[in-house]
Image 1: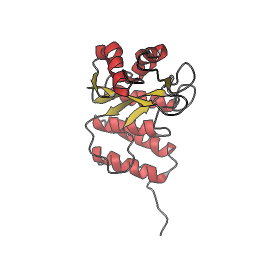
Image 2: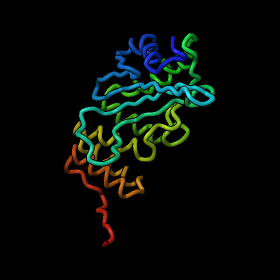
Image 3: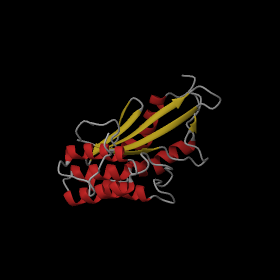
Image 4: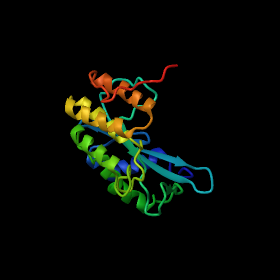
Length: 214
């Protein structure tokens, strides 16, 4: 018996008791489901050093079938770690002969599964991402995910990629305009356009960006 639970063993337990009935498969410390143009992933991470050995669970919902990124940061997924009932983003890591924390199992079947299954397909992902941008109590919060990553216009950018993937030109233009209006960093907006044009070559900003002369 190991000194403490390993990430792979925790993932196996979560898969067997909670996620397998929802169609997830496990590989190592990850449980994943691929359908509806989305990849849904729960990753288990452990930290055995320090005064508080811990477990952290990261969930992500990502678009699939996109071309390779051409910039350093493309926001085509939504992810986060749920706040626990104790107000932390981690759970105590038990010794290998002890059970997992009850609230960990409860959270995987509750808020973490709700996040992973919030959108059944790309159409619903577009709506969900905009809901996250608006936020529950605070922009960028959703349920016990405080925050959802990426923050800022990231959810709108992800929604725009989803709209482009389903070839909805009017929706792409609407979401691009929202990003343009709400993203103050012109370089990040440029990167967003570069990525979006891989899927929707005709997209243009409403207001041409004029750069100062060098």
